[in-house]
Length: 154
Image (cartoon, rainbow, N blue to C red; front, side, top):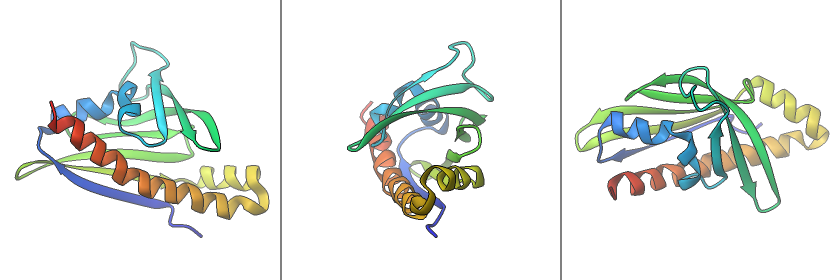
């Protein structure tokens, strides 16, 4: 079975609060994610803990939308959301270090996501899970690099 958790970190010259604000504005996710091309809040007045947003994702072979719930929203410390409310958790933590902030992005494929893939893909579930895990692993490095580039060019 694929590794169902991945994370990566990068040091960005910037304040944890400012970097949190950048990442927690999900409407900007398309600027740095290699898969998620755009996001929007379901309710513009609800953007913190418990808020839901929709993301439009693209790969060469398909395009799809997801709904995600914000499960951590502590400015300057952590922002996280769970796709579908129980399928996969994406998170960002912000730790002050010499020279700026260490931003760590993490992904975990949750038991409900594994079950969904088993139901949806049957005998291909393991291969599809491994594919999704590899996309997350490589996407984390690309996303962090793009966030760094954007944050340090301001």
